[in-house]
Image (cartoon, rainbow, N blue to C red; front, side):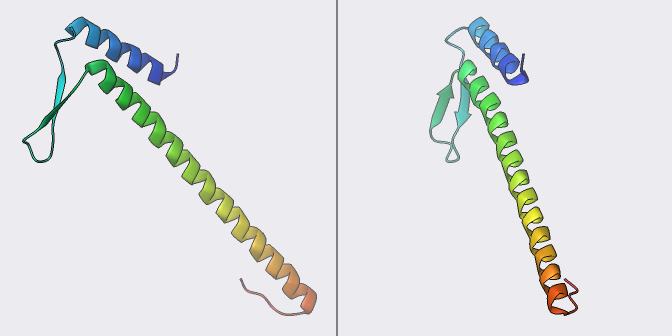
Length: 91
């Protein structure tokens, strides 16, 4: 069972055991208004957020790896062209 599923299940059980009248209150920056979020929904947001950011970091890492491979291929191509033309290439 993935950790996200387990944590969502735990948050749901906790929310149901606390009852529907129990709410997690989040105060806005201004402090004048408060937003009430049910505990199971808060658990869903927490687990989904973690998975989202993990996926985003993985995606950016792969993009970085592809860019590094492209730079290497470009350097090798330039080196081959320079060698063909008889020019010294230090890049």
